[in-house]
Length: 150
Image (cartoon, rainbow, N blue to C red; front, side, top):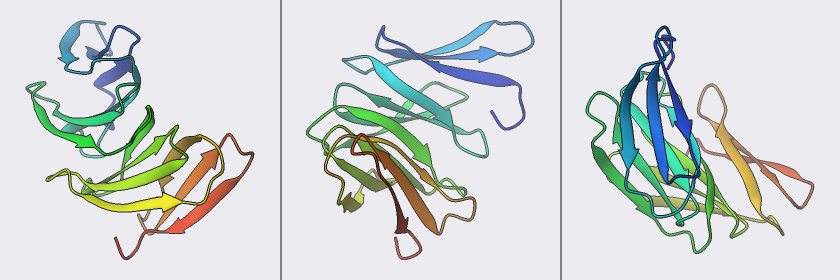
């Protein structure tokens, strides 16, 4: 988390776990994916966690309760990463379907599909000001996308 108090881990056991950094105490187990969780990250304000899974979904969770807030469905292949934009209103997912997708964090609505890679999209991330997205792919390229209108 941005305050350094917690960490979140992704696991092949289909869960993500939230841990207190100072003691190593397990604070929450996020259960609901049906395949391994490939990545997990906190929003900048620490209030939510995004997970990406081999079950072709990403999920948004409340950090304090571990409650599932929204499921992002629409990739026809495993989702490898899910990252928040700086203000937490959008998530970008990277998938083995050769695309990245941008979603509304609150509603789960699909806002855009970023197409152009010819192999798996391994990661996708917003710039620090949220105006751009960079994707990297197994096709040995990285692409920069305009996110300012999303």
